[in-house]
Length: 308
Ligand SMILES: Cc1cc2nc3c(=O)[nH]c(=O)nc-3n(C[C@H](O)[C@H](O)[C@H](O)COP(=O)(O)OP(=O)(O)OC[C@H]3O[C@@H](n4cnc5c(N)ncnc54)[C@H](O)[C@@H]3O)c2cc1C
Image (cartoon, rainbow, N blue to C red; front, side):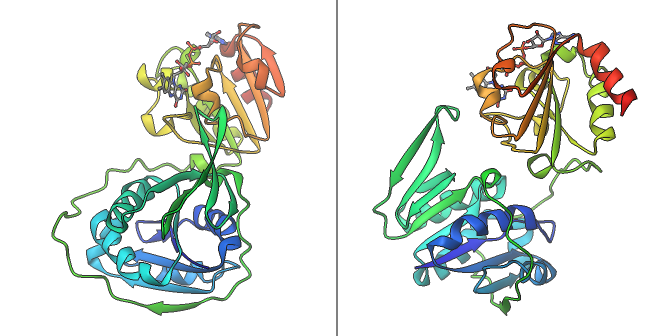
């Protein structure tokens, strides 16, 4: 079996974390070829060559593939597909844009958010906001899968795969990259952070969210939020954790003023240690918390920051 794995590259830089964890998941399927497709991605390919478990790397460095533009990237993958049984990518926003196009062109279905690989055609994925695990057996000739990376270990960086340069396919002239509007932050990226401090509706306002951010900065943590906090305008929507937000599994997740609705739990319940601060002792978050503090977050969070 041969696997074509699409590397996660943003702004010419590879996410070793996302790519390496997806690699850990798919390498049991067979030989893995890593595809680096973007503009200015040769340094990304060099960085990826250290990932243990890659057979070889294909590097398509082309302005046509600027910032992972979905249509030409999908065309490129389809042009390579004959040599592979599985086409995979980490389940990122990029992959959500690219893989459905690949699958449609190959007349296959996408098996999304795979959390377990049983064999070459059988995969596990969460459904019902993570309350059940579905086992999917696919009879498609080529399996197109996205990997939910949170549950997989990162690949070691002891490899030395060879990098082969390839060309992009012709411009399908369907789309053009104009600009990316990305919020920059010095904090760790939410989905790969070791520690996440999240605030919910209980935080009460955008201004009050500063206490969550202060605690996060003390811990070198990423900041997360519940959907209620995002919908209320207290936090930007790329901080949202949950079923319709990001899925995180840090070593430590601190939930402040979050009730623990199942849609929120779907995004964080695999965290190794969960700490909840809530003034309602009946809040459902305490059922999943390893440590629970029944307290007013406006007292407890600044006190914790000061102590740190
Ligand atoms: C299809 C669908 C998808 C969804 N996707 C998501 C998702 O991705 N992520 C998500 O988070 N939600 C999601 N939701 C919404 C979810 O159902 C909840 O409404 C939401 O998670 C509630 O957010 P919250 O816990 O911040 O707010 P609330 O449920 O209002 O809880 C606020 C908590 O703060 C506590 N509190 C208040 N003041 C203080 C204080 N001073 N000190 C300490 N504690 C205090 C309260 O006791 C309460 O427990 C989704 C819902 C649907 C239907």
